[in-house]
Amino acid sequence: MGCSKKTPFAFLKFCLVGLMNTGVDFSVFTLLTFWSVPIFTAQTLSYSAGVLNSFFMNRTWTFKQAYHTKGQFIRFLILNLVTLVITYELLIEFHEHWNWPLLLSKFVATGLSLVINFAGNHLWVFSKSK
Image (tube, rainbow, N blue to C red; front, side):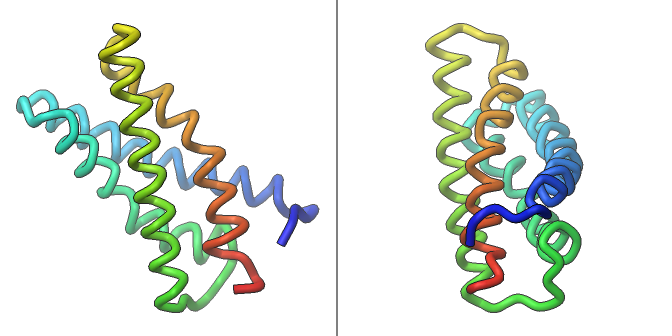
């Protein structure tokens, strides 16, 4: 369940999938906040927009699994819910308490949650031992 020689390559692929998902996330978030949707709602909807794509891309391309179990999808959803909470809390901390611009706060919070999300996917969701 630890790191293998393939882990750095998997992390690179995970980051590429993440870039695509982040593009969707930022686009939806920007549009929703432009329309004055509350930050919590905008963050929840924008983050969720990339989650389903992330599951399929990471399962088939990053971690190379042709199948999934119900338990795997549930673990994926739990991990992403935890990551959503962490990202939201960081977003609010940076924006409201540190007075950073909203999109900068979103960018930094997203970057910080990347490592947690990769480790959870690699070691728990898509682990070969599950």
